[in-house]
Image (cartoon, rainbow over all chains, first blue to last red; front, side):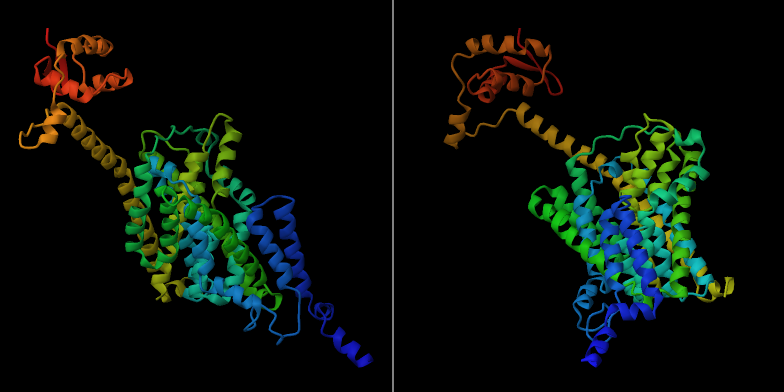
Length: 377
Length: 138
């Protein structure tokens, strides 16, 4: 009986955790993320499933029972299939399309350039990652963190460097959640108070026909340019035409509620679970985290600087803060831009304009991912 | 390691080309969407013009088709009807558009306003003043 008890005890998580402190560290990280998501409300929709996934994924177990996310035939492995194949990101994009109103972008097409400019951070980081001796496919996967788009980062990494999904996804989502901490200092650094107080004109009214034409035009122009972006942009524009056509409201409603919520839960939870300490806590992961922060900061800075460059040529100046919303962290970065504009001048409403940049950032980062993927083929 | 690694992996070309493609793609998309509303406006104006022309132009009467003859039959008391329609058009000023007169007649619940207005045109009681605008015969 004593032997049986000892055998049982050596198979418990307590025993394994006492043998490897890294699990404790990761569980603490998970708890910290849970705190940030629940108490501080930093992107709770993403952070809560991810954080809980980190906690669950770092409960050590006896290998070979078919329990872990990296073990064949485990339940979690099947759920993780949606991440490694890029299925969940595509479904998230479908829901995102069904949620997004592109009116503000259609009313001010020039703001789309800010979404493109923010993607420059992706390509700067590509150079940085290559310089740090990452393989080209790994470097491309790290660089896309700069797009600040979790699903896109996961999608590209699943295609190019599946062994890095954990750290890249965690980095991407962490920085999305930490927008209120990362972006404001960069915005303040690169803009003057006077620039931050620039008011934008009220966007014009956009007709239903225009809104309906946009997803068709978008899918044709973007996906013909970068067909590798089809799984993301095809789904994004499908969701959007479901919404704008007005004839399949039931489908659009399901896409923007039950479908995207289900995918987000599984995506977040599986990404969290993939941070199993023995796989996740490596020197490379730490480097990826640092590069991710650089990528995100560079993307924010690129948008801001490009907006200032645009102002050199525009008669009616745009508020350069909008450049920071060119990253595709919807709607976090748009909200941050709006809040900073209001902080400088309470009568300044930038939200609608920032959402235009944000939605173009979503398209831009998906094109960037498609382009990077095709470069690596 | 370092810059040499970037060059060895074709990094400069990938970064430059990648950034250019993304920028070009979004510039093209922004140019295209900046034209959508112009196309939509043009299309809607065209449709509106067609509709106006349909109201303004007298429908051809084809004697062989009895149904159309029946539809086109004018009321015999046109002068009495003019007395009803003329005050209606006063707020519109002179000249006025037939579609406005038609709308007011509909709002006042006058019977068969479309046929009546067409008959006014055919009888010369309503005369074209300029492109798409009409006046009453003195």
